[in-house]
Length: 384
Image (cartoon, rainbow, N blue to C red; front, side):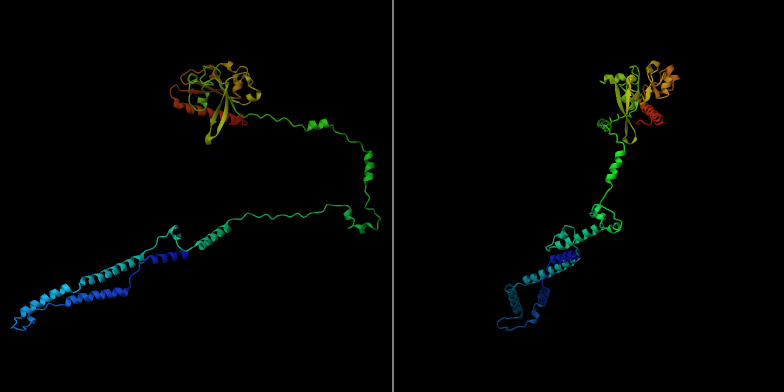
């Protein structure tokens, strides 16, 4: 970096304009002053200093003065014009002053260096710059944590054990006892096996059955089920259940049918929770075809009023028994008279306003809180 700064200062010094020889400027100044002094020293001859020469020829003092004046006037037209001589040194003197001023200004200038113009030089600085970069890279690599090097384990080849190879090490110990180290107990073992009962062989068919792959277990669903009335006179049906429980907005079944909605045997709605989590719920209006495992997943039911709605349900003989196992709700208008059966059963009444649609959201959010509380308390194995 220091070499770059010295090089830039040298370039700035080379760009400064050169001044003419100071000695020549001094001579020009002296010449100018001499010409100016010579002009001022010239005096005009007065007639009083001139005397008469010859009265006979009529050369009086006045006439002589007139002749001298005429001669001087003629001489001025014949001598060299000094204005050109004055102009040349004056111009040099002025330019010298300008150069002095420029020198002073340039001496105070500082070159603005950027990452672009600092590299614009005729000198090849590749070696210096690359050396700096290499040192910086080496410093960064040194500070960077190095991965732990696992030493390579070289396993030594071990010879297998040989009973006969051990005889040369223990030959001295068995030499006095006349022990034959080359004999074995194989014959005695064969005699012992003759007295034992033969082992029972397992038939190949039994092995095949035991090794057979077991059938995979059926995956059990954890989706909760909500049952709604199948009657078209109910405020909640398969036509508008999605708008009510998913969008929290009441829309009549007639409006949905007019919009082209078709009747489906069941509807899968998504319960939106905090954090963008959604939980599926299965909504059905005809539960008589349920399997036993599906009845275990029933968590809520919408009661319309008549007791025949729960005829044939395996959850209980009466609505009271059924409502002790599942959470019951009743959807009605706030200005309608409540059914007698609903008032006697353990049912949560959801009263909707006919005109105030902005109140629907709070009612259906309260419904979901009750359902999730029931699942958490009685059926925690389900998804909620």
